[in-house]
Amino acid sequence: MKLNSIFNPKIIAVIGATDRSGSVGRGLVKNLLQGKKLRKIYLVNPNRDKIFGIKTFSKIEGINKKIDLAIIAVPAKIVLKIVKECCEKKVGAIIIISSGFAETGEQGTFLQNQIKQLLEEANIPLIGPNCLGVLRPSVGLNASFAPLSPNQGEIALISQSGALLDSTIDASTDKPYGFSSIISYGNEAGLTLTDFLNWAGEDKKTKVIALYFEGLKNGREFFNIAKKVNRIKPIVVLRGGKTKIAQKAVSSHTGALAGATQIYSTAFKQAGLIEVQSLQELLDISKALLWQPRSKNGIGIVTNGGGAGILAADYCYQLGINLTKLSSSVKQEISNAKAMHQGWSKNNPADIVGDALSDRYKITIDALLSQNDIYGLMIIQTMQLMTEPIKNAKIIIEARKKYPKKPIITVFMGGKLTNPAVRLLERNKIPNYSDPLRAAHAIKSLINNH
Image 1 (cartoon, one colour):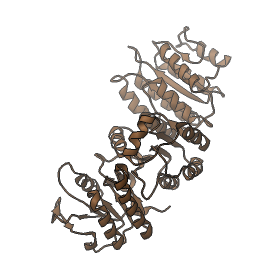
Image 2 (tube, helix red, strand yellow; image 1 turned 120 degrees about the vertical axis):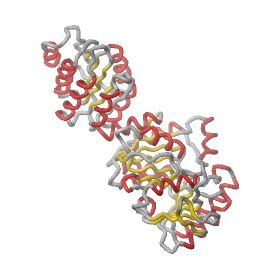
Image 3 (tube, one colour; image 1 turned 120 degrees about the horizontal axis):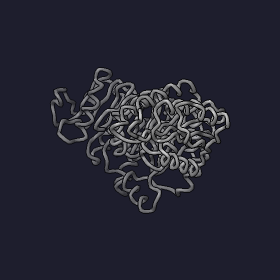
Image 4 (tube, helix red, strand yellow; image 1 turned 90 degrees about the vertical axis):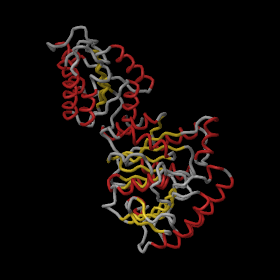
């Protein structure tokens, strides 16, 4: 589906533009003006002559240009009137930010359906209503009222909830990963989650697709498209509204209907989607899939902390991740190394003891990765007085270059003392997690036929 009018518009009209402090219209205008060198932005407000020093128009029909994208942020009661004007203007696409539609009940649903019918007849694609908007960092587009613009990257994040996106953007700005696009689709009166999933599947900037939704408009169509897209790009999904109490909240949030949890989970599995249970896990898994190769089931664990290694082994067992038995030659190689503590575990997890310096990490990492039936590695570092985080990180980066087909996930536990090493790892596309459970879920997502 070609949606260039939405994702790379050359001329945008903002209806409901304002510079009033704390307003959605102000946020929209400020964000759009960041890309004003790349496209023309027209502001529509009948009550103002200028906004941020820019001339305004009283109606969209007064703009003597073909509008690619019209963004509507006015009270719900006048949205239908504005939509009619946009149809007469023959705009390329519309985003309705305004709330007050199907999520509010019968009257709002009626109004939403009127808008839907009008735009279907005019063949104008619609996002919303009741949404945050869209962001496309690669073309400098922030057509939303999000508080920040995200880093450019290769994850497409598509969400029914706009507020979740706001928080995610904020949390990700200091991270080394970014987004190819961020889409808040709200009530789905026009374009649906399935449309955006199909688009992201064809988008050359996108390598991983992350979804949050509460209900589906057309479940069968969604799963058919998801199965097709998942063959070329991994899809990670977080679904809200799984409990009865949450399902009541769903209907007042976006007007969607949540279905039976087990039915969804079974369908996700059949389509090859990776289902997660939290927003943090959605981003954890997306990052792992973006940076690391897929692998067979069978990993090694290297740790300088016995307790952390035991926890990691427990989590792997619970998730169905196999810990490969160390070969006698690998055990011999590690034991014979001069730097190795003779009290090391001689097992998988390979516990190289708390006083391990970077030379022990290097010996063990190289030995385990050289074993053919160890297909990936989880490397745990607990912070002791003698631990060398930066040196350990550099060793891991070199190992990643030497064994590019084997995923490496790290668990550098701690804070102030480990953060510089974590930044170094992640700049080199080695995902780090603060807890072995998060790392185990990441490893699980990388195993083919998980």
